[in-house]
Structures are given as C-alpha cells and as structure tokens.
Image (cartoon, rainbow, N blue to C red):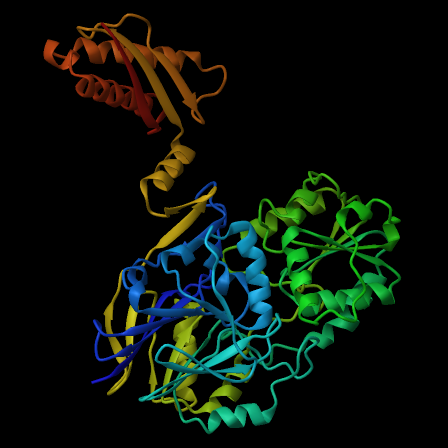
Length: 552
C-alpha cells in the first residue's frame, strides 16, 4: 500500500538549517523522495574557526538514486544556502522561483561545485511535477521576494508546506495574500499543514513592512552624522524602504557587504528594484559628507567577519564610523546569536557611536507569522494533521498546542530525523533516521562532531603541546627535549617547560630496553608523561603531540 512520509534532516528542533524530505511509495525501500529546502545555519563562534553549519544529508545521499530533485521555497540562506556545498552529493535538478534561482546562481559562481548545477524555474502561482510528485506553488508574503508555499498532492491527500510566511496586508515588494488565496487553500481539504513555528510565542500580528517607512524616516531625520543600517541582506523590501528614507532625508545610500550586492543584483534582474536609484559602492563612501551618508551594512547577527563587526572595531579597510554616528539594527536577533550581537553593540557604544534597535524604536517587523496570523491560516485550511517545523522544541510544542486549540485532530512534535507517516491510517512517528551536522571549515566540509573539530575545541580550552624528542637507535636521548606550547603558557613561564622536559627524562628512564626501541611505545610514554605533568602543575589537559626523531 502506498505511503506518504515526511522526514526532516534539519530545521525541526532548531531555527535554521532547513532540509525536509517527502517520501511517496509502497514502503521505505520503494519511496521516491523530494527534498524541500537545503539550508545552512551560522555558527555563534563555538567551535572556533567554523562559520557555517550544514545538515548531514547521509540518509538521502545513500538513496540519491531515488531522489527526484531539490525544491526551494525561497532564497534565504537557511533554506537554500547548503546547495552549493552539498549538491555534489545528490546531483539532481534544483527547482525554484526566478528570484530564488537568480540568488542561487550567484552563490554557485563563488561556492558551487565544478559541475553545472541544473536549475529549473517553477511558476510563482501554478502547477508542476517533479517525479511522482504533483506540486503547486502558492505565493505568500515574507521578508524576501517570491516566498512559496508548496502544495504536495498525493493519492492520500494534499500537504501544505508553507516555508517561511506571514500575512502582510501592505508589503513593499510583491502583493498581499488575498482572501481568495486562503479560501482556495481551504477548498483543497488539506491533509497536513507543515508550517513555520518561529514566532508562535508572539501574540497579535507581525506588522506590515510598509509601516517602517515612517518610523525609519523619523529616526534617520533625528541623526546629525552618518547613519548605518544593518538588516538581513536578503530583505529586498527593506532595501527599497531605506532608499525612500534616504530620499526623504536627503542622504545617499551606500551598500556595504558582498551579499548585499548579490541580492540587489538579483532583485534588479527580476524587476523588484526598478524604481530604486543605483546604490553607491564602498569606494564612493569617502566622498560623502557625514550628514549625507546612509550605509546599508551586512552583519545584523554579529558575524565576526561581517562589515559591521569590522566597522565596530574600526577595522574596515574602506569604511569608518566615528563618534556621534548612528547604527540602526533593523532586524531581529536569531536565537543563539545574542552574545555576538551584544559584542558588536558594545564595540560601537565604546567608540561613542549611537545604537538603535527595535527595543527603542519601531525599526523592524518580522517576516514570520505571529499567533493571530497562524490562527487565521488554520481557520481557512482546517488540516487534519499539523506538523510544526522551523523552531526549537519549545516552539514546536507551543505550535502543536495552538493547532489543537484550533481543532486540528493530530499535532505531531518531532525533531530532526523523525520519520513521520502522514498517511494512510493514523499519522505517527514510525521511526528515526540518522542525522547530524557538518561544518564548513575553510573550503572543505567536515563532521561537526569529528576529531578535527573536537581537537580544536580541546586546544581552545586547554592549549596544545608539541614535544620534539631526538633519540638514538637504543632510545637514549641525544639532545634536550624541545617543548613547544600554544595557548597554554605565559611568555615568562620557562620553568614549566623545563619541568616538562624533566618529565620526558623520567618517562624514558622507566621504559624497558624493548620499549625504548619501539617508536610507538616510546612516543606514547612521552605523551602521557608530559600531559600528566601539565595536569599536575597547571590543572590543564592540553592536546599533546610527540615528534619523535630516531637517529641510527
């Protein structure tokens, strides 16, 4: 008997890194698979050296011969940012709306595989097919153009996978969601609603993007010197609003940050900024009087390498902020990024730069639905099943409670790896598949829980030691052991190194003649002795390596 299942590999039990799989077939060995979204999340600095984290797609990678394609709901990084890094593991077509594919194509030029990725456009509101999946897009509103809810039609009923959405009555880019669209969804007899949980704890309505024009204009009008506004780079509506703010306050707009330039290029390519004058570049910024400059800057989440973080430290190669300038955070802080954002705030304030956030002034509206919007969707759609996604566990549980209060028969709270059978029969979690996280480390993908990352974390907390030992054929020292440390000793603590060298002597004295001639045994004895010495003398357990040189 045919079954319909949903298996999230990312984005369920967490915010970000969305990757969902729909399986349709006679059973696990027969399923044909559709991937909906393939996103990333950004590191909060732990572990060190890791900026980008991706879902581990091993489960579907092992079944890629039955994967029909990757379908993107929209162009946010947490929904499509992993495609350049993971596509080579699947090698299937990628489907998306024109704007989403415009953004993705630019990312692929910089970060994508050598092979050409087949990009397949889908209609903004229309039907199409991917393998055995009969699909239909329905346009909602969000903080980016062309956010697409997906209707997945099956013999068992229709699933509405919303992606990110809200009900904005007056969006700056695109049109509102008309009542007839919601009524159309209501007529579909939706089997399951798989939907966004981000703002389930926020009462009321998320607010309209159009409301920001007056609020931002008022704030900028009150600023005497430079103004820098940071927002999500993909928020094309905010770029348009800020352009209007600049006109009203007689300022010129400078875009600062590579991702902002990519987004504005994609937006112009698709006609979303036709009435917006050309932005100035970083090279033009120095020619503007301080009271005529409005910068739009990347780095709203405190990313260490972002333009704003560098400007806050006065470390940007071309752009300066000075005392009495103003930075407006026209964004929300994603859970987990609070510390990084606070560091940027503090660095700015320390230099006499004014900081304005949504706590002080109405300079941001969310792109996700608040409780009233969620209730409205449930009232129209009336699904039999609710599957909360795009949220931490607490968000999912609260969303499930809301769905039950709206009369939904089954509300299933799972996490990444849960295999949820939607039909036939009673919907339930029928098993779990392997899940994990990968990390972008430089230009390579490594397991987040692998030895490379673990050893780096250990070295961060406890430092590292390298002992170079030169011995003869019989294992006797031919020179004093050399002890090199990193992140462990202060420059004046030579006595510790001397003590470690003495521990090497003692360890070799205790070895048998046979062990002295065995490279592995000798090196391990030295490693253990030196690590024990640092533990006893400094209460630290450094990552310890031995470089053994044996001279015949």
